[in-house]
Image 1 (cartoon, rainbow, N blue to C red):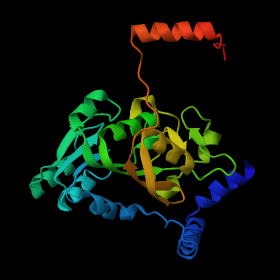
Image 2 (image 1 turned 120 degrees about the vertical axis):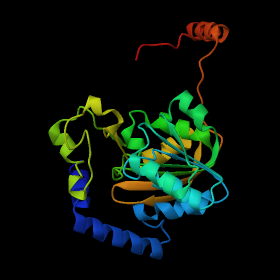
Image 3 (image 1 turned 180 degrees about the horizontal axis):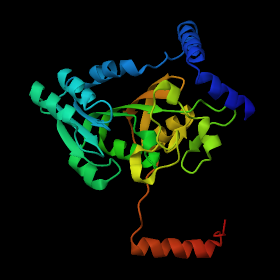
Length: 275
């Protein structure tokens, strides 16, 4: 783990990060690797997919005030919905008035059945800067799949890949100050509640809960029912453009008759053992 810690510390250095991006850009041209991602390209991705489609931006407020919802509307989206766990900002309301916009806002958590019902199904879903703020990232992706008919654009903070340990992840709450320090990117202008300082229960989803590696995020997406078509990597972020497919995993509670039959079969097989 010593080498991995060194890699993370080096990538946190702006000059090293710049060299890394240049090297990755060169490799993408020479070796036909995926291009390096860039937050500034997110509006272009929205425009590419939103024209003529219904569109929803999940997590549309924090720091952007519904901007990508308006970009989708201007690009020709037929209906646009913004969703967030806190109410519409003054900036959002002002933009909506100035533009004569018909962007609809839904207050809610995309893991909530009530929110899913309010949003309904749409062709294109954008979710940026949300996954690591939720204690249950798979439930977020399962909710996104419930509303997504066609395309998901997912952008999320991520930890660098761990060599030899695919699908790795770090849960930040309750880490010691020393352990959190490795992931502190305050020098990059990020406000990382729960990393720069201790976990703050009253901050709710404002906390940073998860650091997920790119392979972990990809596996979560595929398990939730998305095929990854493009993946754009950065030092500490990933952007995925995905197609909605049949989910390989689904779970439902059995009814009473089915539950009794399962209990009988498990007892008869003698396979139940305490872990």
